[in-house]
Image (tube, rainbow, N blue to C red; front, side):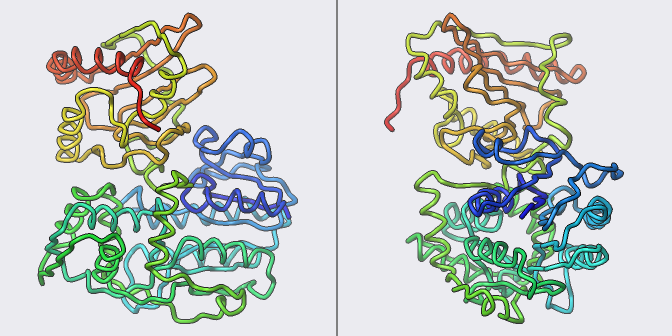
Length: 478
């Protein structure tokens, strides 16, 4: 079949794409920016990539006419706290317009369980998107899920951050709200199981795991699986804003996502039927087993996708191409060079920078900068990186965004998503003479930008100089 995959560079889409290819389907990936589709060269050679922003006015003849099935995996919850529902409705309307001239027979939409009488804005928006997609000409299959548990999922990473960092928690009463978590492996089974399955056309199905748990119980069971001490005390009053800031400072989530999640955590998300589970013969995976499966992937460095790599987790809200040309005029620079005795070692060190490896010198200073960034509303260092030694364009590395990653050139270009009075780039290149060039570029915004740069010069002198030397010479155990 010829399949249209929207949200191909999202958490679900990145996992679904290789499964569709393995089943010998022809896949057309729709993304806002082709440079951000973080897949291997081998996969890119097997797919067709089309750039479309579904929030823009639709353009004619952008999609192939012979589409058989389309996956709708788009959402805007992380991008806004006020108008994300309007954006989601517009996106669904424009999707219908794009799909109308094609021969598409089925649209598969992953939404949210919405059986509670008092829904959050997020879940109401999911329902509205569902109703909008029903107006399209293709048959609609809706899968409604609650909390998805898997390596890299926002829900799993938030619980992981909380339990791994806080042995004692004082929590709001919403931690007693019930939900029905589902393993990402089961979600993928459902998404592929309904593909072209006419018995699922024009119908909606709740999908969930075998356990109905409160958020408190989910954290307690996580702590048990990980053999961590954990004591949770709930308080009757804690405003949504305070709860959101609590999640924001303790976990790697953005404030916008935290606020929307807290709003939804007051609503029970429990499945009302198991028809699809029976129809497809799927065995639901327990919450504890889902955690074990997630850590099996993490420990083997096989995390396929992470919500942290999405653009909405940082400062960049437009195309990466707008930042990839490092400016020369009106900029302040720190340039370092060193001749390499071992080109391969230096390249490996560059590609492992950040995350658990750190920044090769003065990690305590980088951590302090991360804490300060969090305090002023930035992303801090908690995003880490998805892979320990693989980098794709569009990925995040702590509080940097990867603008370009090419081992062939070789060149790594990063853009700062920390809060600074200006714009900052960090670039590593190795020339034909085996000279490593490390360049920090800062384009200040007004007098405060220049004061910021000059106040940081003493730190730059030590950090950047030692960093390039350690990149060139330091060896780490594999």
